[in-house]
Image (cartoon, rainbow, N blue to C red; front, top):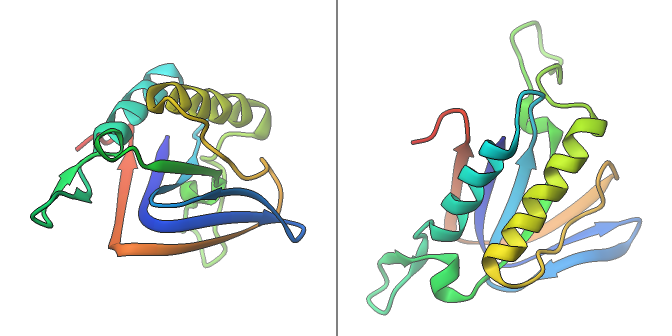
Length: 150
């Protein structure tokens, strides 16, 4: 699994002109699922995300986590995180898991993240054409890949 993390002061996702998810300060998570992903990938990512120290402390140093701050998370499924550009200029999505596999994994990711945070994690609508609005705070943008943990 891959997650593009953006520290935000606010974020929202709309489908057909209707807001389906909205948060204040926290993390916008764009989540991609690969066909070979499973529970261990979810476990690693959830633990990393809730403990990732990207929020400022009293001295302005990035030393606080989502758990420390009581911040929110908004998760949006995004198969395009597994784009390949090896052949020509049109991206290939062959590494992205098909919907029948990625949807339950994404839903388990959201459920587990909600449990760890002790609050609901709003989402977009799986497979829909979505418009995501955000105010990137910092800006802080990070890339997490469960197959290349750093």
